[in-house]
Length: 427
Image 1 (cartoon, helix red, strand yellow):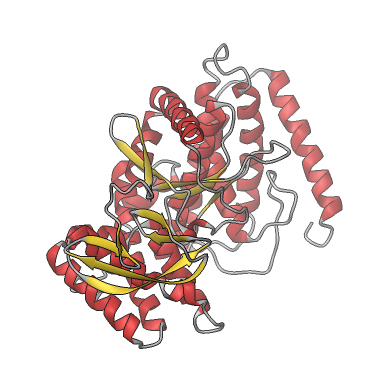
Image 2 (cartoon, rainbow, N blue to C red; image 1 turned 180 degrees about the horizontal axis):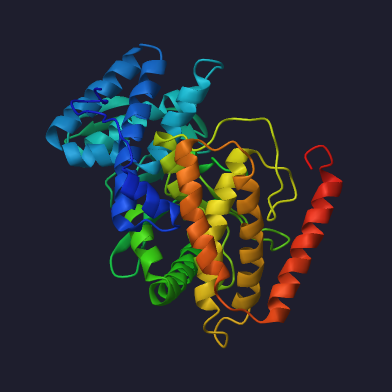
């Protein structure tokens, strides 16, 4: 299948060995890299479908011509743009909306801005229009510039890689730029900290506005502290994160200090979150959400369950969950329990870890049994369940004080009772 340019969008499948490794809760860097190759093809296909959904206008033809010309000059650089997380979110949004509703002009024009980014990276040419959003024009993977118009079209010209906006040259050293930013964690893992791209608002919580330099530094130091914890106590998780974590989207600090996090379904490897005060909690949050990315990547190429209207009790939620949500929760909380188990071995450094481990282990054990009894898993899903059960059995073999186990069981019973009252039809 042809991609947006001269390459090929491959068909992907998972080997039985890779599926088994992933079901066991980990998978390793090689398995994550295999999942990412599938995601790259998916994103290229999404980009093709997105521009095919747009009307055949002069703008569209100009943008595609510029992308193809840039791709001829710098294929790897342009491919990196087309599989960028924010470009993937744009493409998925177009594909989901275009057949059924009118797509805002600002979103249509995003294709032109992608072409501008390609021309800038490849040092080629294009003349087109971008769109001012609240006084900013945004160029994917590069950053955004202030413009005079608060909302409306903006003339963009790239000549041999140099950009002018409404007739004014805007060199990348221009102080008006707000550049896309990355955080380097560990030895050499770069993670985008996405706080300007207009496509980042894909979660149930609105993304934070541009971070100040001081706030950016707070995030950088917090991520470094969490990464150090994972490197010391969960090195296998760090290898996976290094292979597949691409971007973090900051959320505003919640008023009630209840932590929020989410995974971008249309851009695997993108996590939205507010910043926990505790680096251990941040470490666990990264692991939790990355598990969702891994499982979602598996589900893109393999059916693990049959769709159903039935709803189930998930101990970590107050609402009734479909089979898809139950499976995602079990997979994520196996990793949560495993991470707290490792940290609980150092109680003087992580005093809450033992309690958190006991609670998450009790929750995931019950939810796994619910999943097994659902009769909704495919044959591949049953194999995946067997792998997850092995991981849970290992967690259950870890000795905990009787008082910690009893407290966790009481909390689980209380949550089950409250859930049954709130969801009588599902129970």
